[in-house]
Length: 104
Length: 320
Image (tube, rainbow over the protein chains, first blue to last red):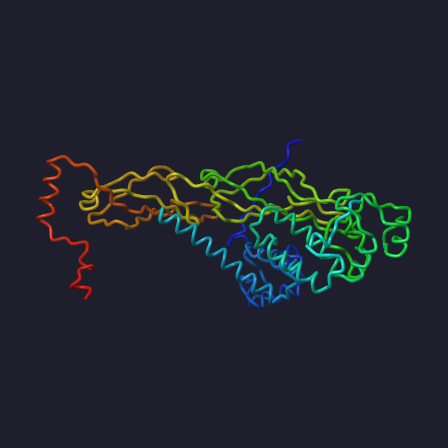
């Protein structure tokens, strides 16, 4: 039997996940994820909306939050601080790649 | 089951205090955590030390572990009947020594705070499969057009003897077109198998795109050098530029300078939904390194007839 081909999905600004999907994928209690939203570590498309949706890229951040919470025994605020540094590192790495492209 | 020396895993002696155990774990977590570590075998090392900490940080689990006795790492052993009567809860048949398919950490799962974090084969409720992560290296063409690829991964799993081993995990997946270097993709349901009806985990792909001899990639945009001869830049010209979608004709206006960029809209990477990057042609002025007598004379004539000073801003009179 030939194994079916599975589609890989881009986790970009276009694809969207619901709050429920994010909670299920992150593996953190819902109230802790709400704290991360409150601290700005996770950003919904429309924070004022009655039901939040998120760009799919926040799925990776939510999973990282769960790992960091569990493995470093940090409270949600500590997790949000670590996530901000990880995000900064990713941005810097992307800038370096972009500069290499432009400068040749 | 096989014995694991949790104290040695954390670099501790038996009898270490709770504070020493915590400090040792935190020191090693900084070094080996997959989110921050570039160490070789970081994932495997982190799982081992996390399992050790899960047991030693809890007084009841630690006491149970200490009472097992001490064996050589990897040595086959079986808890004594006395140990089983005293410590084993929620596992049926242990008095008869039914531990063959247990891993060490699951012995303590019923104690204190509940389940250990890893490797138990007798899960008491549905458990989601692990998420896997893999690096996928694509050629520029594969990234630009999309590709079907066969992934043969080597993932960590707990074996029946309670040890960790690498097993093959094969996935065939379709990468969409227009993916970029550093991007993450998700393949739903292609991670580890869930147990007792739990959902399968996902596979996350970290994309790396190989360099192209001509195009440099920045996000969805492409950069290509546009070398011009001095007279082309001064007088203007028309050039043919290669793009991944086919050659295009570009009009270079008179007075074009080195470093100037020409944008070719929509000629970068493209993905479904109409999102497309652009291509940028970066002007470089190239000069002939060898000229004959006539050409040399013409250049001298040009130099004498021109007032152009590209270093006017460096003039000491100006900068004083």
